[in-house]
Length: 136
Image (cartoon, rainbow, N blue to C red; front, side):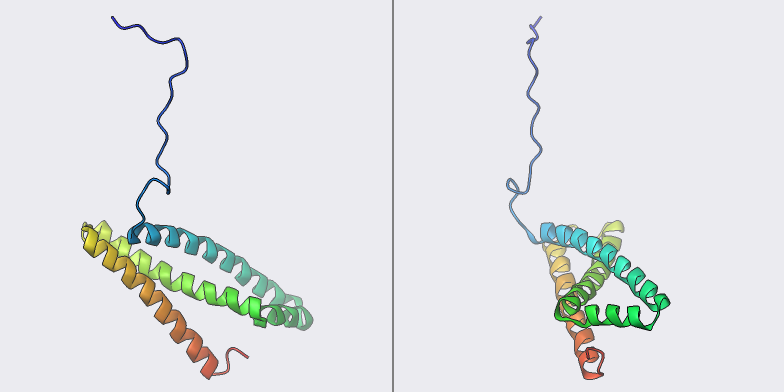
């Protein structure tokens, strides 16, 4: 029979980001979570827009001035990217739910394609908004 030690056993530590070698799918996973948090913030901004609209012309004017400022536009730009990346990420997850795309090369390619899609779609939306006067 072996003797059990009377002290507290040390438990193994979980691996952290410093232990793992960075790869694209890790970036996609972290970016997906960050974008979801951003979309929650966007939902709060949407609620603030509705409240400002219901509160009258002066309150709505203040809201529009804040969102039309450079920091406000940067937040909206980030929300646009977050929306498009989340759509791409959800399509990737739906594909993975069917059991496809798990090889490292395919998984990496899909994440890169999702990031490129989000950047290009965001740029197109903001270029169209700029051309039609939506950014003034």
